[in-house]
Image 1 (cartoon, helix red, strand yellow):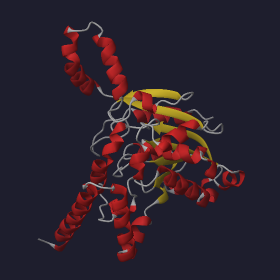
Image 2: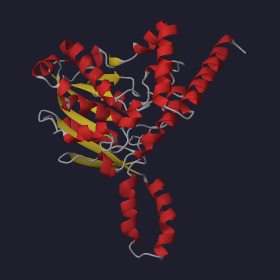
Image 3: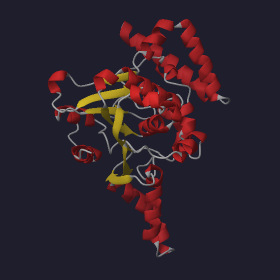
Image 4: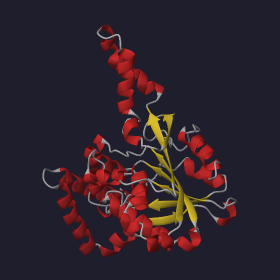
Length: 328
């Protein structure tokens, strides 16, 4: 067994142990907080190296930029880094100046919004006066929190960062998702299949508070949804619905009801509405007063492919291209 293989097995073993400890009964947030403190104290250089990965990162080079428009991409909860694998190259090819915001996606959403504000202020001179944001899943909530919370919207604050001309939310659970209660399993997927594995990855990205924020009716969501939408930013919602294959399977499961109830079609539609993209329902994605578009697919397939070599075009991408053509 070579040294590299041995190192990978050791780090995988450490990660499994850490995740097992987190999944044991008790206060999960408190446990991970203790582990985070331990890592900071005993592995300061490695911890700092992981922290340095967060922030606004430019993806375009000067030679590819032909449009004077900046697009910031913001991922969601426990994303292993591939959500923009199809959209990003399309936007760069079209000449947009593309940036990505990387953040500890397991920390409180408010903390992620603060980091976004700080990064926008830090890069203000480069970004200019107006940018547009495309956010997937929880990334839309991070953006909305920054745009509406009083902490980031004092007169001086607004002068320090560029204005957000448009926010396109793709599969954003604006009213929460029940599956957030199981977010520790998605955390394991995030860390083990990110392609940029580090045993500290699951420690520096937060203590699980984001999952609590995403539960329907949470204090965070209640406060966020009680605020008015910003007048200077156009909100757009893109919501997913399960694809034909998944819907066929769902119809087969509902078939026994056909013998009992002639309103099976109405029931099916109600179920489909509640299912949405498999993680976020249509109702949860919808915001009052905000235009909503629907595309067919799952929470991830609406914006990216599973395999990099796939030539399929995720359905949200042509829609996003069309929306970006409409300059406010």
